[in-house]
Image (cartoon, rainbow, N blue to C red):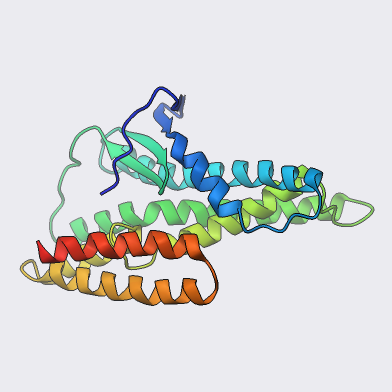
Length: 234
C-alpha cells in the first residue's frame, strides 16, 4: 500500500543482522508530528526536537524489530526494515511458512502484534529509567535534561504509536489482526467484513482527530480510509 523506493539520500545500516533503511520522508514525519509543540525558547525547542526525533526513531525501530524477530525466530525467515513517511515496514526475504488451523491463526496474530508488544515493553523500560533518574537527582526532576526529554518522549511515543497501530484499520497491525480473524471464520466474506469495519473505524478516528485539531493524524487516517474503500470496491 505504501511505496517508498530507495533514494540516494537513504540512511542504511545493519543492526542485529537486520538490514535497515531510513527513507528521507521518515524525518519529514518526525518534524510534522513535532510541529504542534509550543516554543518557549529556541534552546529548549531544539533540545526537545532532538530528543523527540531520537525517541520516534527508537520507538518505530523497536516496533519493526518486534516483527522482524518473529519472522526470524518463529517463521525462520530473514527480513529487512524500512522506516518511511508513514512509520515503518518489515519486509521478509521470502513468504513465511504457512501454518494452518488455530495454530496458524495464533502465529499470524502474534506476528502482527509483536511490534506493538515490543513498543509497550520499551515504554515500560523508559518509565523505569525515568523513575531511577528522578530518585537519583538531589534537586528533583530536571525537565531540561536531554536524557529525561528522550525518556519522556520514548515512553509517550511508544504507548501512543502502539495503541494507534492496534486500531482495527488495515494495514495497521490491528487491521491485519482483524482481517486474519475474519478470514479464519469466514474465508469467503472475511476480507469484505474486515474492510467495512476498517473504514468505519477510520471515519470515527478522523472525526476524533478533527475535533482535537490533530490534523496530520486525520490526513493519515483519511488516506487509509480511501485505500480501504478502493480495495473494497475493486
